[in-house]
Image (cartoon, rainbow, N blue to C red; front, side, top):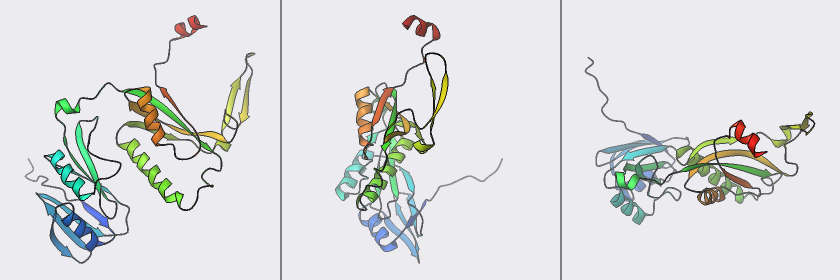
Length: 248
């Protein structure tokens, strides 16, 4: 049997300004600066060690297991560092957690297992949300609106991948679509373009979990930034052929 074993893991977060980042982790998150060597430094708090490195790299996510999550959340609220999209909440997978953003927009998620009674969630249903785009809507945005739109879209994709959502599918340009149509005589024709004609065309769909249709609609409203539509329907088992014949 090998005598080696893993002891701990130390995340290394990319930062743009080391001095500013050290001040943030020290003064607002309660860490202590353990060392600083050129463009590289480390901070510690209660056995948790995080390293900071000045790099040109995208922000990353770091998860920290804690005890006393509610008390810690109150402390972080007073420091006004809570991620606006990720306040304290009990997630369907049984973790009670919240996130903060550092000056480089690295996301630090603090989490602990939720008590059994707190993690119980109402029965969830699955809904498919299709979304459309209106031709030319993106091009009509002002330069001031574009950064906010990109940030909102990125937050939405993170949300889809992180919790309530199980699938996210984007379609290619509607101009590349083909539509197959069968008429009452059994003739099949292939048409250029999507099955709905006009400037508004399907852009994709995602599948979410929600307690009810109304709750699913509220989720879909949060992701409607540009002109267009979202259709929300509950997923259902396909009916058997015998049922279909009786219904005719």
